[in-house]
Image (cartoon, rainbow, N blue to C red; front, side, top):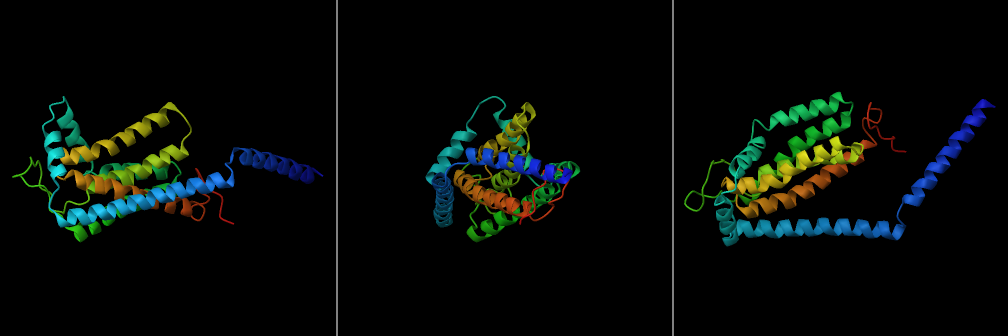
Length: 254
């Protein structure tokens, strides 16, 4: 008798939860429209990146590259230079390993085992993709006869590795904070702290003369596509691996 009452209670709770979910779920036509919008946006980004890659492969730099670089490097805003140097420093090897190791240990130690593994996948996969594209395009870096160059990286220029790393890796960590944490002031602070470098890293690479602006644009375009791929793989694997992890576990796929 007790088991029957328990089953009835569970059934009522399940029915109530399903009713709430249905009331909050958009109609099928709206869901399809949203999916089409997102998929169309990704296609546009892919086409834009492809066209830009072809363009930069044909010319060492664009006139607008030169103009934007000179404008940024002429800035006299207080603290602009140290901020640009600091942001780029974080994304340079080997110091880039510091946040990767710390974040991975924090995620795993917090019981987010699948998230920790995926953060490592992002940290390794994004630079690998960037390097393959760099070799395929083999665009030269800005030179000292055109702009001020603060450092001389030995790799090719297009697309920016710093921007892709920040967007692919820290963008994924931003997604985890956004999707997993409850609404709170701490969550908001984390989102700002993680999001601000994603915006600043692009200008920092141009200011330091390490990249042309078109390298930055290409990195943001490709970086978004890679980030979407990482998030989709993360969500796909969420219901297949580490289903019984201590925190933020997902139900096993039926």
